[in-house]
Each structure stands twice: as C-alpha cells, then as structure tokens.
Amino acid sequence: MQVSELIALNTQVLAAAFLLSVIFGAITQRTHFCTMGAISDVVNMGDWTRMRQWGMAAGVGMVGFALLAYGGLIDASKTLHAINRWLWLSAAVGGALFGFGMVLASGCGSKTLVRIGGGSLKSLVVMLVMGVAGFATMKGITAVLRVATVDQITVEFSTIANLPHLAASALGVVPALMTLILGLLIGGTLIVWALVGREFLRFDNLLAGLGVGGVIVAMWWISGHLGFVAEHPETLDEVFLATNSGRSEALSFVAPISYTLDWLMFFSDKTKVLTIGIVSVLGVIAGSAFMALLTRSFRWEGFGSTEDLANHLVGGALMGVGGVTAMGCTIGQGLTGVSTLGATSFVAVGAIVAGALAGFKYQMWRLERLV
Image (tube, rainbow, N blue to C red; front, side, top):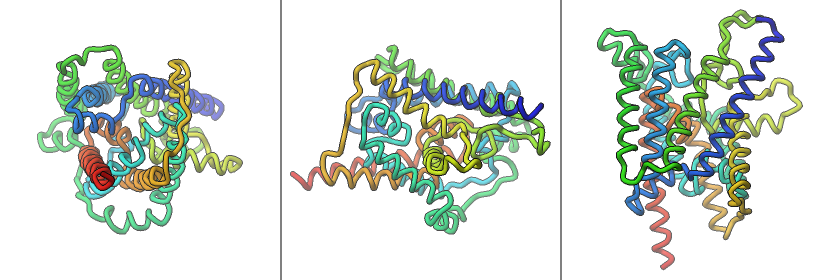
C-alpha cells in the first residue's frame, strides 16, 4: 500500500465513522434512548421499556461482534478491551463515580452530546467540564492518583480477561468458537428478553435497540476491518487507522470528548489529528441537532439556579474522572465493552447502575430536605 492510498483509506474510515455517529445521534434523539433514563424509569415508575431498548442494543452488539470475530473480519484479541488484566477495582470505583455523576449532570456522556444537539447549553458546560476532568485523569493530576491507587489492584490472567477467552482456556477450545457461542447465547437471550416485553414491539423501541446495537457492530467493522492495515508503508507495522489507542475501537464518549477538546485547542499542531473518537463526538451532536430540527423539538436550555449549575459541574467532573478510570462510559463499557464480553466491562456496568441508584437516592434526600 502506498502512502497516498493510506491517506485515502484514513479519510474513508473517518467519513464512515462520522456518518455512523450521525445516525447514532439521530436515533437517540428520536427514541430518547438513554441508560440513565432507563434506570430511572425502572426505579421510579416500574417501566422497563427503555431498559429493554438497552438490553436489545447490548444483545445486538454481542451477536454482531461474535459473528465478525468468528468470520475473521475482526481480531477480537486486538481490541481496546482485549487485555489480560481484570481491572475490577478501577471499573468499580470509576463506574460508581460515573453513575453518580450522570444523575447530577442529567445524563451520561452520549446523552450530554445528544442534549447539546437539542439546544442544551447546560450540557455544553457539562461536556467541557467532563472533557477537562477526563484528560486530567488520562494524563494529569488525577491520572497520578488513579495509577497509584485503583489501577494497582488487578487480577492478571494468562489469556485475555473476557468470558470467551477464559472459558476457551479452561475448556481447551478455540477462542473464536467460544466467542461465537457465548455471543450468540448471551446476546440472543437479551434480544429475546427485550422482545417479549409488554408492548415493546413498537417502531421507536425497535429502532433504538436494533439501531444503536447495529451502529456499535458497524463501528467494530470500520475500526477493526476497514481501518486495519497489516503493513504500514513507512513503519512496516500493522496499524488500526484513526484510533487514539492504536487498537480497534468502537463507540465511547468520555476520553473522545477529552481528545476533541485537545484537538480544538491545539488545532495548528500537526500532531493533533482527527480520530474515530473525535469525529464520533462531532457526529452525535450533528445527528441529534438534525433530528431535533426535523421534529421541531430543538429548544435552548439554560441553568435554572445556582444549585442546578453546581450539580451539573460536579456531575461533569465525576463523569470525566469516573469514565476514564473505568475505561468507558455507559456506551464505551456498557455497550461497546460488553459486546466483547469483557470481564472489566461487566463490573463497570454494574458499578454505573449502583452509582446511578445512589444518585437518585441523593436527589430524593435533597428534595425531602426542601419540603
């Protein structure tokens, strides 16, 4: 492959990722797909509809990833989540911080971008705070704290710390086959669970579950197959084009928001280049704005009080620190990471839910004090 061909392929990868993120933003704006909202609906109203949307999206992601890996279209051992360390404490602490923060900030990282597209200036402030806090936790003051504390407590395996590889190692079978079996089994179960839900078979619910899950799968194909170059023309090394990690990635939003701010602030620095994560952030906002304008739901929104501002500032900071510590958000770990059946991802999801429940209890306590 010539350098000119590599540049053209890199542009193609970025364009495809941007288009998919536009679709993601439009779908989530149209269907109100939201992890925090799903948890809130269950806790406050006993309504499992949006949780079933999430379950279907996770199931589609698992099945799609398994089929791609088994078919040899992507290498499951070369994803961002494919490491041999089980970062259970980082996932637990980071996930809990993120879950609590998303309640204070009125939504997770993806919901923040969707709300910006719908006209929320509150969410714009949250994005800025989350991006700065996230970058500090990747490379700054809170990164030092993270590395010296929770990241020290891990469990190391001789193979990749996900369910298929651990099971394959124990049973002596091929990891790709176990990825297919577990992906179809667990993912299929989630899809069936969603479909049998009362009154779930409606267009918006199916669009949310199948659409969001499908975008995750397509992102894996773009990053892990389309953007994979076996031999870079200059370094002769294999490379995954337009990724921040140097490995195949799908959707995530905390670290990419930080990289987006970094790219904007140092735009003239030629070492700062567009990546799948950055164009995904911009694409979700654009897709949400398009759908909001199309449905005439676009509304400017500001802070209602000083307390409202304070809650969103704290929430954004907690999501930035927690999302990086847990290696992902409700999308980055909750859908993308879980689609690989990563052990760390499952801990992160559980901790996010626990953090969100604590956040709801805190809000109720605050309301009761005002009565």
